[in-house]
Image 1: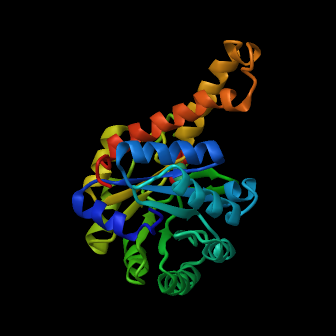
Image 2: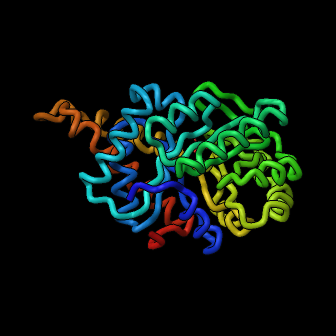
Image 3: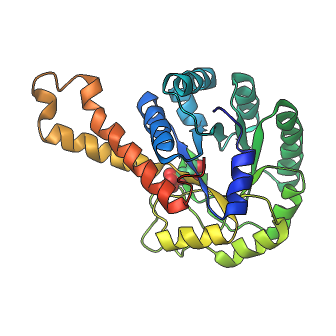
Length: 287
Ligand code: 13P
């Protein structure tokens, strides 16, 4: 089922669990994530960063691949295709390409500009049936060349953006993309609590899902987080499984160099990681 992310996230917020956004990088990633969701009977959001979109030769290719794969694999669970950290132009490109959901990341812009552009994109997305995520307060670390300092969001700014009618809100609470540094201070639950008090029923998004201890994830869900983004974790297990295959010399035995064999352990590793995260987030059986 190819849907936008609004309904699945409202259900998650009401049911006190979170839906995972798993970023995709290629055909294997997409297949692994979709098969994991179907096996776990969980809704899923496929995230596409601007860099990954470019790598996959454009948003149209991605949308066509995802739609065809849902049909070919008989995927019955709700699947949303979501632009991750999009700029203004990327949002319009994804709307045109047939994505069901977009994130406009105006967090690095002056707040008034973020507000104005988010407002415009909310109107356009809703008119066309897409869901939309906004961001206040940057997520730390680097993703596809976008570097954030990781400051905590201002809860009042969150409320102002929430009132525009966005379907989900990413608010910085000390979270960082990629692997967390040794001296990381942890999530600011105080900030999250203050944001949730002001934004009420709005599903909140936790970026930088890789490396956050399970207990913190669970606590964040109790404080209104209904969508959790995971990217690096899948990349790490894919690389590790592929390395093991090559180090064991399996690519040199028989037809072990065939990409369908070479990439299989990494693909299986992604699938297992996605299911593990769905169990942690509580979305298993919620499709
Ligand atoms: P990680 O790479 O840290 O899992 O973060 C993913 C993310 O937040 C995508 O927006």
